[in-house]
Image (cartoon, rainbow, N blue to C red; front, top):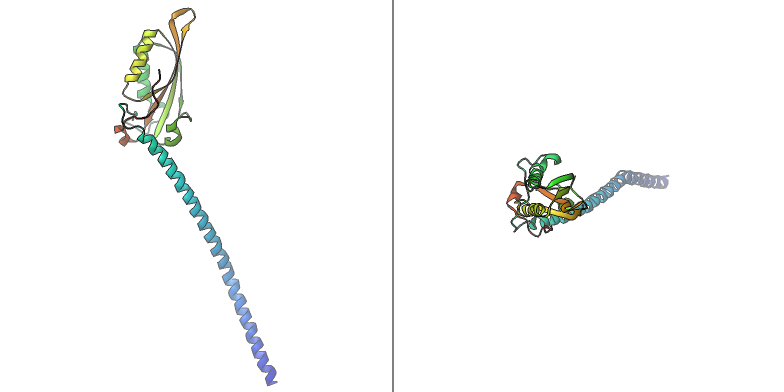
Length: 207
C-alpha cells in the first residue's frame, strides 16, 4: 500500500502540474495572440504613416516648386484682403479690372462665362488650398487697334494673368470688324506672406 500511495502522490502532483500548466496556457495564449495582433496593427499603422509622410513630402515638394517658380518676375499673384471669400467674390477685383480694360479699349463683349479651378492647371493640382484659379472665356467684337490695346493692357497689368487662348476671325460682313475668342486665367492666393513673392517661370502670356 505504501508503494502505491507513493505513486498516487506522484500522479496527483503530475495531474495538478498539468492542470496548472494548462490553466497558465489558457491565460497566456490569448494574451500572446492579442499581443501579436497588436504588433501587426502597429506595424500596419507604421507603414500607413510612412506612406502618408512620403505622400505629404511629395505634395509639399511640388507646392514648394510652384512657390519657388513665382520668384523673380515683375508680376504678383493677386491676394485679396479678405482671404475667406467664396469663389464668386474672390476674383471680384481681378474680374472687374479685366472687364474695365475691355470696355476702356472700346471692345464689346458678345458673351462671357467662367470656370473655377481647372484640373489641368499646376496650381490647382498641387496647391488647391493655397491657390485659386478662374478661367474667364469671352467672345469679343473689336477692331485691330482696340484689340491690340487690350492685349497691351493685359501685359501691363500688375497682377499675373495668363492668356490661355486668343483666336481672331474677321466678321464676314465687315472685314474691319474682328470676332475674337479670348480665354484668360486669373490667379489668386490666400497666404498673405506670399504677397511679396513675384512670378517666375510661369507660363508665358501668349497673345
